[in-house]
Length: 252
Image (cartoon, rainbow, N blue to C red; front, side):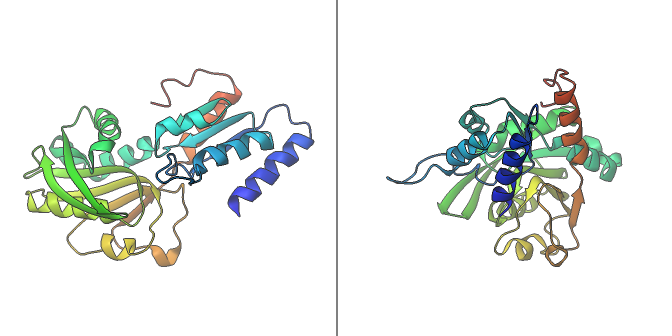
């Protein structure tokens, strides 16, 4: 429904002779379908990019796309913004007395670049990595921790929380490895399936911090959940694009 609304709005703007149409998509829901796993399988991410382009968009703004290489599916200018800033600001406020004790943790090897960028915004905080093996789809098993978190505030960083299997297994490993507190931080809060039940377990997370790119229904909230706004990040991006200012530093 949201996609069809977007396409209709883009088409309406094009037929109204808009000089430029910039499509802002806080959460690009088809970003994970960026490869063909089985024969004769649809490449959904590319298809959605084609639909948005053909509808008449001149430019696209995305936030924390799952696979950055998916930006190549769009045959038009694309700006990839990061939801890191509001998450870092929240953490600096919540853990002001213990900033020196923070260790940023990637829940899997594929998220190391994201965790490293997050750590740089925390004055080059130490980095740890969880070696994860996935036994089946949406079922994750944390098997090894690379780095030291004993007595530290461990901050798990990911682009999204879906069923929360990966991030909860990672949190259990961090607790067993001596972390004093564990935070989960992600841009997109999907919270599908048993996510709420897993995330709300007492003593697992101190806080689960997400942005508002995906609305969280009141009945899906829990005590540890904190939602921060990413509006100013997208607003600044839109303003810079409209004024034709350089955006390189902002989108890091």
